[in-house]
Amino acid sequence: MKIRFTKMHGLGNDYIYVDTRRYPIADPEQVSIDWSRYHTGIGSDGLVLIGESDKADFSMRIFNADGSEAKMCGNASRCIGKYLYEYGLTDRTDITLDTLSGVKLLHLEVKDGKVESVTVDMGIPSDIHPVDLGSGYGYTEGIAVSMGNPHLVLFVEDIRQVDLPTVGPMLERHPLFPDRVNVEFAQVLDDGHIRMRVWERGSGITQACGTGACATAVAAAFTHRCRPQSAVCMDGGTLHIRWMGLGNRLFMTGPATKVFDGEIELDNE
Figure 1: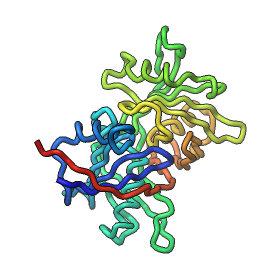
Figure 2 (figure 1 turned 90 degrees about the vertical axis):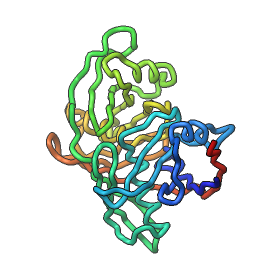
Figure 3 (figure 1 turned 120 degrees about the vertical axis):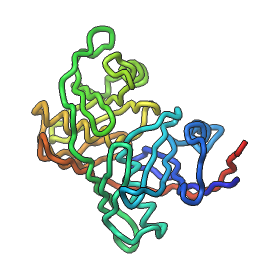
Figure 4 (figure 1 turned 30 degrees about the vertical axis):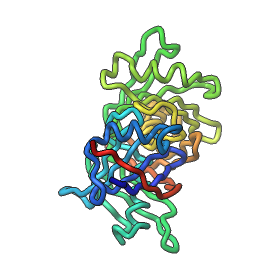
């Protein structure tokens, strides 16, 4: 069976997108593992499935490169908005998207038929609190934030000194987070912007993380390090976060980019 797919990225956070209304995939966990491999597969941070929903205009399921399913991905949400509009699946610039962390609203900025940026209503951040990491991790304090998926934000003086390949997987599996956690290291810059690097649960180091950028902006505002509206600068680029504080909804704005379309054989056995 041949599957048509589209490779897209949000600030370098790249996924394989499949419209499962046309191409159903029975075992997305294994398919994500196989296709995400860079040397023997397509190469990506994971697999995103677009489908129908009885709650929203469309649905989204996200599988990380290790086959685990994520509840939410801000970068993937923006890419889906671009995919739906530019492939003619909708002509609306406001789209509702059903995810495992609830229904999200996408607003598309369109120019000459192309989606230039997408703003996602990410909902109300929750479970915001300091955490004591204990000894043995190199870092003792962090801020936990839920953006529909769990995040641990650690503020540092110089992000260039963080050994992310070593400390990232250790903190991802910290005992405080039995389901594992996304880990963000952040440095507040002199201009009030935030420089961030991420170790994503199930994918490792990625160029950007939309929910991670949101969690980092929330943690920075919660600890009075900077104002609630922030530019979060990651390895792959910058996202703009708008949040008015505790109890309020958070909005994330950034680009989405198509890389290429392709076709791949899917073994049904």
